Length: 153
Image 1 (tube, rainbow, N blue to C red):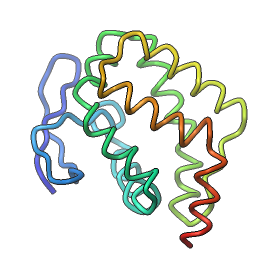
Image 2: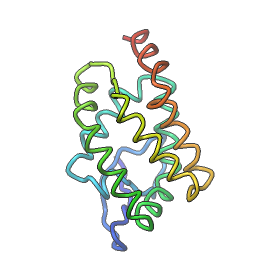
Image 3: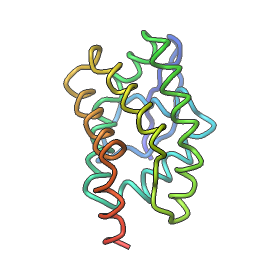
Image 4: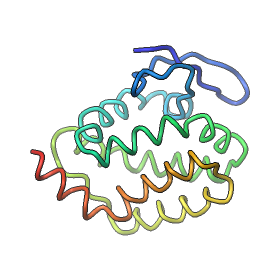
């Protein structure tokens, strides 16, 4: 694990994160805004997302976009509120996936994810757009991901 700096409401705090591909000095949106769930999210990253090429692309895109994601969440309270609520709603699905179940998002949740992604696009930079595209692929177009996961198990 490496040290990474997480920015929370203008203050700098330190969080321990396993950095993908060893890059240092990255911000950690999960640890910043959901520190009580960060370890669960990291386990999901490693045990579920990290097992497929699609998941690894999402992970790489997340770390590339993390500094900008922090800025977006700080500058846009409505996006922050929606994003945090969605992640909290995803936690039971993430927990089931960590125990081996295929991640299945209800259609209403997929629609809310799509609306959040659309709200983020106008304020996103190139790295953040790549992350939003990766999220879209795994949530909105999820039919590919569970099939791929079944093949790997």
